[in-house]
Image (cartoon, rainbow, N blue to C red):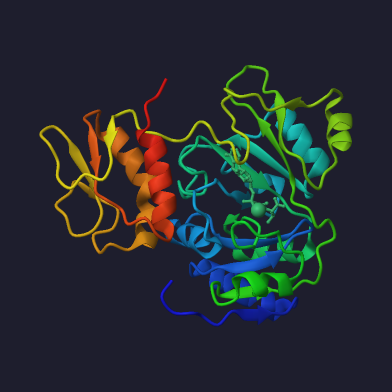
Length: 322
Ligand code: TXA
Ligand code: MG
């Protein structure tokens, strides 16, 4: 971000919620309270808004984000909610539970929200102000915890302003968070026929409550499973075609994924804007994948700001696969 913006502090009233919804619909960033911690919200269907979330947090990599929705009914538009996932949703939503579910095609969600994966993390929060905001904005809202990367999660609006003031448009002040700990994340693996729930992150919803609801011990994540645990995302989105990074020029047969003023079939940002490049990254990798299998050369991307996260993902996508 170039200029420091003035972060608006919005009250927990009708006017505050309306203003927050207006900013979010326009692609701005608003921190809002949930019962777990304050989230750093942006329109999950807007690639640029999602890219700005990573930029504001200063995250060095694109960890997938949680999509917040106002009701179970709204979830079905974006993800497959079947079997034990549906049971867990009915038992604990709204509440401090996040479910990682198979992403529906044509969901309209930004590829960046799920970091290009075929699953998406969804949560229906219980906090009344979060629910009012989600209903009013009527769009899925991507929100990681509203702290700069590497700092502790915020449980008051003051914490948010200390960490992110000047980097986001507004914070909706709903006082303290009752739970104060991030949501429990459960993945429902889409590949085995069993649709077995797996604990991905312990959190504000106790494991005992989850196990009582499903009637058996919850499986822990195991390496190699198609749903990956937070922080150890071993399977990243990668195109089928081989990739070559830091390509100053293309060799015959290659397609160029460009950055900056270069002649390229597909260009992350002709003007060299890292926010734009991040917003386009996963959608363009998917597009190149869809268009064919010839090798992809990628222009050099500056390794600062969002460029670090872009390079991190490109390196993983280009790494030898087994
Ligand atoms: O309580 C919470 O969960 C807060 C509030 C704001 O909702 N949000 C939060 O978000 O803690 P965040 O981004 O800090 O943590 C989300 C975690 C990340 O560690 C990410 O790796 C994991 O969820 N995650 C998201 N999508 C995933 C997916 N498709 N597969 C596996 N893990 C996923
Ligand atoms: Mg966090």
